[in-house]
Length: 127
Image 1 (tube, helix red, strand yellow):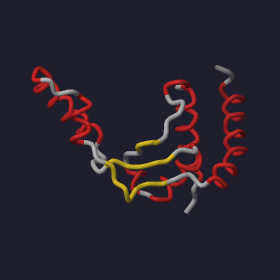
Image 2 (cartoon, rainbow, N blue to C red; image 1 turned 30 degrees about the horizontal axis):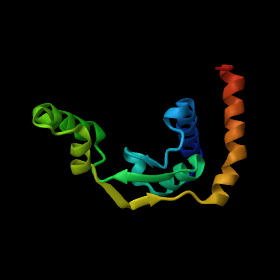
Image 3 (cartoon, rainbow, N blue to C red; image 1 turned 60 degrees about the vertical axis):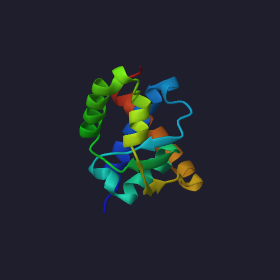
């Protein structure tokens, strides 16, 4: 299997997270959803490229779950139910999907990611 597209997608994910700056600084975990999240190989690549632990929610249809949580909150917030409480009740993580970054892989990806960023700069210019 050729991992190039996975690397490209994951470098783009890391780049996007870095653009968010302080909003993502100190994040201890990435919650991964979508078809690719079913792959332990890709989850490990994401963990290694971002240097961050990766885990998937048990319910991976985020749009449907988010809509259900919003609907429940709209119905129950007048009774003191918070979004936080609903999320604690309805969002559960799949411990089997956990991927911790491997320090040697994280270090190996650093120069590759630097080349990716340099290529972006060359192709698209600065901020």
